[in-house]
Image (tube, rainbow, N blue to C red):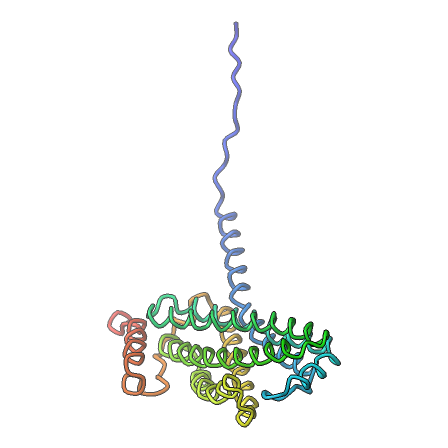
Length: 285
């Protein structure tokens, strides 16, 4: 009686060529993933331009209920497209850029990074809520509901004021943290501070329904679009140079201002966070 042996082919370990190919593939995918903020930042500006162009004749903040119903009922498709693009799509694109900033700052001061993440996340959620309320407003106006249309319209404007306040605080925090912990461009850091300041009167106009301050939106909105697009493009440029290039700089970036004196505790914490990422000259030499 003969014994039958069955040989099981052993799995050959991956060769060096295969492992290198996989590493290159992962690096390429990672760089494409890091390039998404650039596309999101550019698309954010395009979304705002397209949304405003879809319906350029908007109502004033303190419009009457009859004016709201008559205008929205006559321009249902334009209003629907504007809310979907300006509040929906633009809100998602804004969230992508803010998420990239938070992800890049994950190794820095956790307290202020987590605060910026919460504030930015709430702002994006408010934008998406405005999109849903805008669709409800178009539906109510098409049916001639004066009271419901007026209440939704005021709620959207007040939420817009809340969103702008949140975005102003988030942009300033992220601009300071990025500038003090990476080679974030100086002009973008200054733009973040100017944008945060410009968003305050614009936010008060919508939050309190003050039409006299509504014109400040023509200043704050272009600044916000510039900051989002510029920050996204900066992330894309840094991702093409290397995954950790934003923190690998040979020269320490100068702060926007004297942070410990001008921003109190925020300045001291971000300054310490930036000091931890400075290269040790004794080790380099």
